[in-house]
Length: 112
Image 1 (tube, one colour):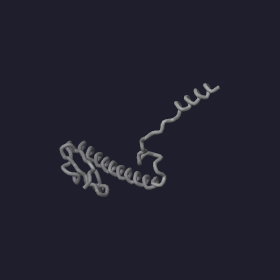
Image 2: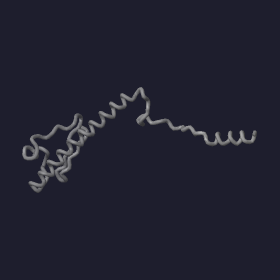
Image 3: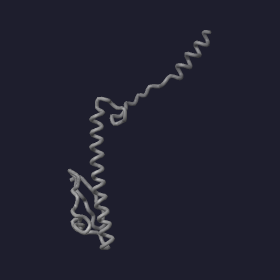
Image 4: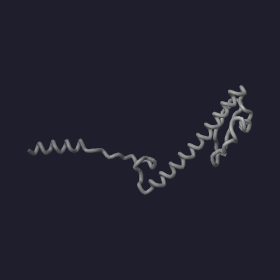
């Protein structure tokens, strides 16, 4: 009987879960519930800014491609897209500006 208890003890000790020494990341889901609302608002603001940059760039890319199809060249600057392709150049997101390369026809949204 004593031998069975010894074997059962060894099995339960060997099968116990090991505790991780890694600390959870502050951005990982299930982080600190007290900071979850602030983390969510920060992530939502970052996603919103990224979406605005993407949409602004996509609209200009399409207008540049349409200009190229009609004229056989890229516009010299973004203002050349008005009024044939766009009613006006959409404003860049706050704190950003457009960077246009007339040789390649590429436009990027970059920090000011």
